Length: 132
Image 1 (cartoon, rainbow, N blue to C red):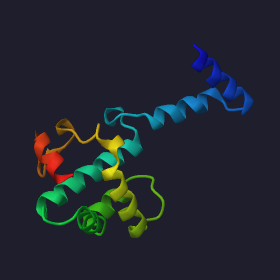
Image 2: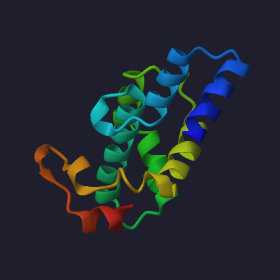
Image 3: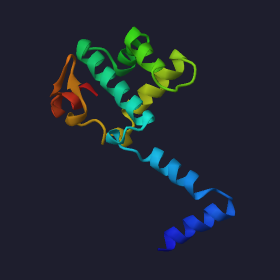
């Protein structure tokens, strides 16, 4: 209970509307299934990355991400979400870091990814780990 009291005290001291704080928390900790746009976009990027990696398994992560970000499919997907103006260099840097981030491990699981053109056929976990 002490932590909750601390949180309430912080919100009051900084004049933060509890509804705004709740929305921030929901957005930050949204799961892929919740349908939050930011999370959905991240999962699409991961799916596109794995597909690109399957096409070119001998490329490095950076080469694969560079190739992906410069692809037409990535740019079309990018335009479907409320993103800032497209900057390929920034996208390459951010996606490379995001893929390597240990906090993303919970998203790189078999049930979240399918084979290209076969949405019901899931990628095996061993393949995902090898491609990542």
